[in-house]
Image (tube, rainbow, N blue to C red; front, side, top):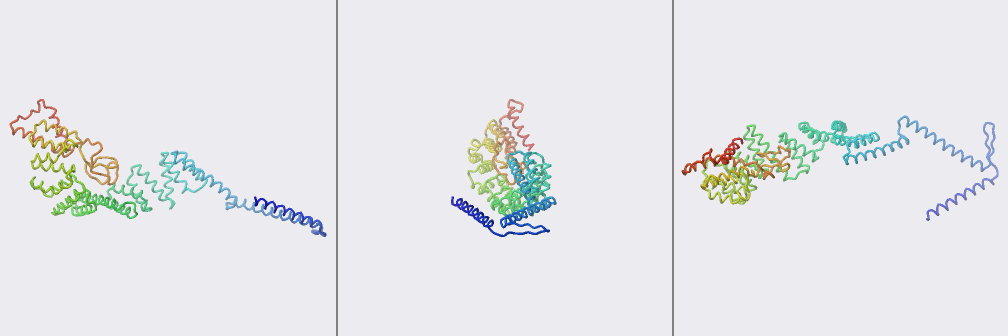
Length: 494
């Protein structure tokens, strides 16, 4: 309100001053005489002032027209001018609008529309570092891999966008299954951005697939250095890589180097069962049975495993069943309620022919949590206690169709592996194998199948020795005979 009143007052004052000035000029005597080229022009003071003002305005208009003409000539010549800046602002506005629409189309899954908008944005903006990435991603979304690769290769020429180009081509090669080229690209991308966690993981995975254990360990150390991997996880995975390296060295026949590598792997992760097994066998070959037993004991403390029991038995291969049972007591007293501990104790008692003790050790596993191994052990117990053939074969029949029990299963894709490997053979995930029961296991236990011929043979010997007639295979007991034959065939095939 006050500002409006002020403007009105100022305007009135200016008008009044102009009126007073004009009146003064009109009343003023004298004038202005202009003589030029023999012509004389007389002007009153008022007319002289008006003429001066008109002249000033005319000069100003002339200068403006002259500057406009110069700007047009510069614009035609390609120089930067106000006109060019005006058109540039218009192009930028249209370009950024097209770029925004392209990003929205890309986010909504409209690949063709995103490509069209990116092309328009490139035409207006002339900034390929902004539009090429959208074009490449839109081409991938539309299934035009050739166009995407072409754009990614253009990105390689600019140092600022080189990493983006390498990463884009890397993803394409991975999708095509070209792991050799992908490995080289991953190494290049890692050299450009060693702190990039996705590239670190991709490079580590590819190196593991190509069994480049030394390179994988270097990549793993880089992940630890740059803070993208917790120290405990690094220690575990470094042990996995050291173990894999040891197994490769062992395959080359370099026993001493393999032994040292296995011992290092076990030192890094004492609970890694395959590392403990390989390290224990290395100590056994050196004659250091005490160290071998210590390695097995430490791994068993973490989690019982049948491979640990097997290598613990290898420490004293010629001992009697009674001596072995006594030596294994140090393992059996650890995790006494663990399933593996119960099965191991039952097997040791069977070897010592103490079948009642084997039954007690097995507990209710054959009924509460039956698998092929538990049912096979139960069949052996029944046989040892003199049960009839029908009872024993009944247990064996159940064992053939029972779940196999714990196996090496990938946590990522649930693929089952016959033995431990550093990377899943199905999904290629690194360090994802766990000793666990598969979600839907239907394969019978190798331990059970290997014991079946021995059990069946012992049944026949027992029947013949007791004076009980041995059943005629051509008689009425055909189904049981078929079970035995199938079992032996499966054992042979394995």
